Image 1 (tube, one colour):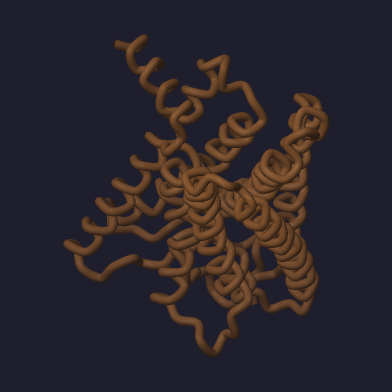
Image 2 (tube, helix red, strand yellow; image 1 turned 30 degrees about the vertical axis):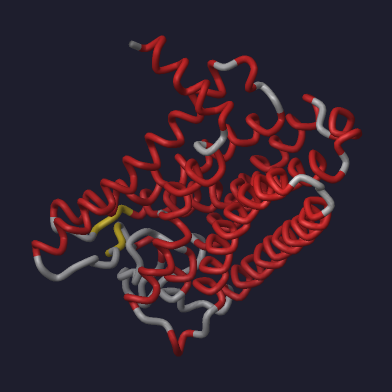
Length: 307
């Protein structure tokens, strides 16, 4: 029987069997990661350089862009490296770092998305109290709470997962190190503790999602009372894409972590993981930010200064 201390590396899921498909996967990941890096990088640059964008909404957008960059940079580069060089290995320490960073950015992103929903709720349903409820200090405290909770959550999960004895080999059925696939290698009943931590995380995430849905219901009720049809259309066109991407992000993550083992398969796990770990960071800049006229103007200003 081997344990985690005797494992020097893990074997990640091979994305394809043929060289042509491996290169195709590399190109697809490269395109998605470049789109995410470009979109989120532009948002960070525009908000940092545009003093008129130093408002709660754009402050939270900047934090969201940072979490998106973190998620992409944690999982995709290693998958691209493995596809390009036809390898599957990742070191034990590299796997632990990947688990920690992915859970950190994933948890922080859920917190930031919840805060952004609260920001929209206050701006639409309680506009007279906006300056009081979302002052600069309150915004800083909420963002810090999201990052700190993500760090603590990730630290607990990573420390507990990699303290388990592993005796079922070192092959992971995923293209990056993920806790459910590491737990499958465990031969100890103490993994019930990690399953308990995952259940707590799922409950907290579910609470965030319920809050987001409830807030959107209140937002839609307020929007329907807007007399201008153009104003209603603008509000709906902003809120509905947010809710759609968030639902994709959370529903696929929930299903990936909670689905019964009987319906698990490498292709299904791969598709789900791409939907919640790779696609949202590339879509978020388009959905949340690049349709905003103020941000577009700031981007054009930054571009003209660079030229």
